[in-house]
Length: 568
Image (cartoon, rainbow, N blue to C red; front, side, top):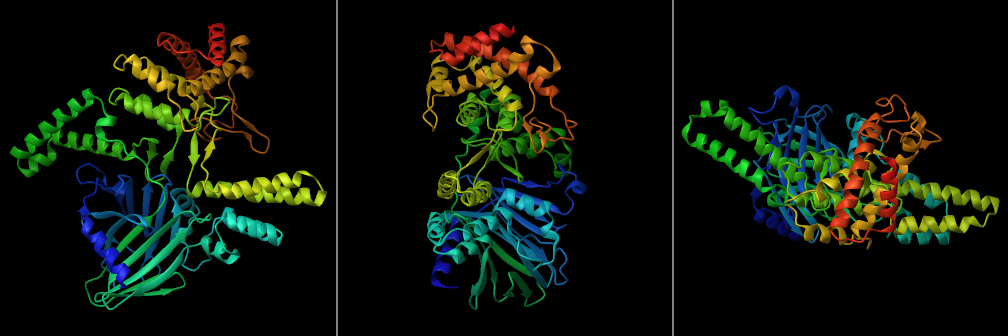
């Protein structure tokens, strides 16, 4: 171990070990059969962001998910000497969270009773990438069965290669790459074997395609207990004795973090009082009952379930968004956030409603559409890369045809590379557009929120400089505009319909999110029978609240009010 590595190791060790915030399965609460071969732990990193690790013995996959501003993920497979999935377990009770110049760091230790392990299929990027890696069953392929590279990334490099030399150099500079070779090196992780007589290390490094963010996995083992070799991106670990194998896994990211919400920001006083009473009863029983009776007592079990639900919601709650779930959905979903805020209304504070509404409004388009889902971090780069390749193809076609538009396409391609990491929004869903007024009305109707606080909230500007009230107005106008045709002529074809895509038919833009779920249909019952009427009622109520608060009623809102009255 060199001096720098030793220094970093001591820094991390000094940070101290933390116990998991949550761990599944839990004896007495979870069905062991449902979790067969699968265990998971949740921690907080140095910035308070959720960090999940799961071990899947069925496939030998070890996955780390950072529920942060980049939806980061780092994973690998563990196999035995015959190439079959190997069973690894937690070697320590917790994990170590720290932070240094490289970014946020999480360290934990794994163990196996086997004398030899093979570690491979390292994938560092986002959970969306890891999810696809597993959906396509790459994690079940033999090691060395071709490199795993997303088509969008390899196509970007190929598209860039076809450019004239001067233009190619400009595009490379926009990606912070010196040459094509350095850009290609970002398509897959770089692996280095190191260490000394005391410690062996394997460093796995990944740089994002635009060169802006880095992630690493470092494996560390006691060289007196085991040896490590690196061959063709596969790490072979061999025990020196009969005690099995232990190794540390250190993951690092310099991606953006989120701002976690404290418990007192999430829950209201009534729920806090209820929680405290339930905890008091459980604690009292723990002090008086023998262990066997304690495990079976319904009040103790009930509180354990309640506590898990509270901790789980805390792990998913941030100022920037409420996440849908971990591990697969550690990202922004506008509809899911609003549904969560509506269902949790009896137990959460007004802060939660304000955070959800504010984050939905900052993504509303000029036409009033609500963003259903965001693509950020590596997923944003992936989608922007696909658009870049399509733009280069369009530029080539215009070049061959001698069209003046070729310059515009090339300028667009450059802009995409300048902001390859720019977050992309999905506006194809329609149910979320009608859910926003319902949630806003619930908030404005709260008697426990002072009028001045409501005025201040609506008058505050988002990151784009647009006041929340003005963004809300855009949505109200959209809702009434879409509802008008059926109100004026109540025939089925005037109902609110899904978006039509020439190449793909009617896109299922509602909660079932599936053509099968909607029978390849055009109109959703949940949208037209539930959300549209409720949104119109909420719009009328919101307008009354705005006037009662003494706020200016923008022109678009006045139009929406006229439409709403006409639809009664």
